[in-house]
Image (cartoon, rainbow, N blue to C red; front, side, top):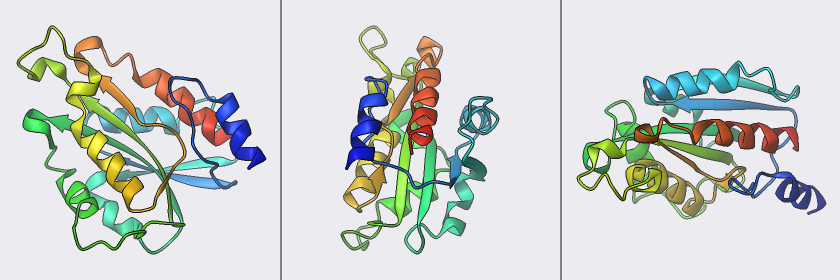
Length: 184
């Protein structure tokens, strides 16, 4: 409980942490294509990476190999939303797996500690004048909510970036993830 309070107190307010990650830890960076893969690489190669943390990049279409429902795992999901609030083709299998109705309640309890970064583009929306990153990251929002509903524990709040604004939300989220892992 004290460690969790320290995590909350040390977290940047825009991305509060909600639980502690076990130490030492290997974090699986489950990434979509293109920008998502680049962001995963930036996190893996960060010079400010916590010393007790190692990262392993996992393409999102290979996520089943992680056996999320069978072993303790720490995962950062980096997913994109494309037109009509849909995942990319590569992420489709992961998103469908998470939303499978046959999953029992608590499937991921005690097994998955996670965070999610959504990458969207509000340029694809009709009303570009009033939209924000929140409006173009439905895949990340739904994945985050579903993982939590399945009992997974979020170690850092979901980040949402918008290509229209230059994805300026990515760097603060990366720092928040590193801080949450450093505090573990």
